Image (cartoon, rainbow, N blue to C red; front, side):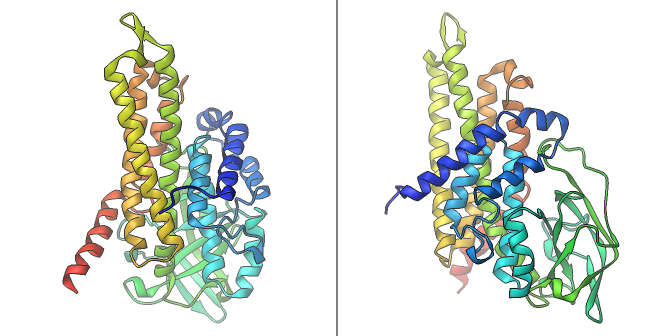
Length: 382
């Protein structure tokens, strides 16, 4: 086992760190306060090859692996958790089209996505189906060489601003085998958006309901065959879970750094906080837990890159463990800051608000436990 990163991976991580330090961190508090979606800054990531990280290079992608992506999102999220998370969603959409779309569809959309001429949103969740994703009701009824879409999607990042929507729809009967994946461009008649949601965090990206009312799209905009959409969505979420875990990890690492700086400067009872053994123990535990989370994340990414049989289980394990650990570490960092951690003058309260949703989206952490348990127990039932 070799835990060392390659020279290329170190260079990729350093590039992402510089971008986060130069472009994201100086603006993160303002974007959060003003609920500003920094599309201009997000599009700069395309110049660095970060708009199609694991998309193939014949359509402009960087053709990197999932471990590379984890390193990138860990680094970006130290600058701005919310913005890094949106870039992850865009990458997931680009990958799904590249991986499962017909060549004509790939060549139509992927070059525009990898250059960020277009930015994309992922549409699976509905008002009545979250964790039970296979119960989705948005319908696509074939009418000649078109589909007519009716239904709604909920909690969609980028809604109203994104140029392309990767949408899971029901083209067949009930259950997962009746679900297909289609692409809907912004501006298509029948496509509309609800009011922006008022959220606890992730304020640097818009979130709203996406509505389809007799929305007519070409059958050629389908990704893969009818009935394959649910499996595409689940495979996309394997990588998405790693990315969101990486965003938690990077944010928590930033919070630990802030806590170390504060403990070095702040004095209480006649000495600095970092000279108080109780605080030393807390900092040691935070660092230890983050290292454990990092190793689990990197191992899961390695398994996904190598297509091991247990990759999905490990992606679920990593998502559950890393996002829980990340939240706990950020919370402890806020506690070390005392009352100052609760103020917007410091980044901790924003970090806490942003990472909290990571335990919910891309499959709740309770659903991660279901995935792990089912896979684990299947071995005993075989």
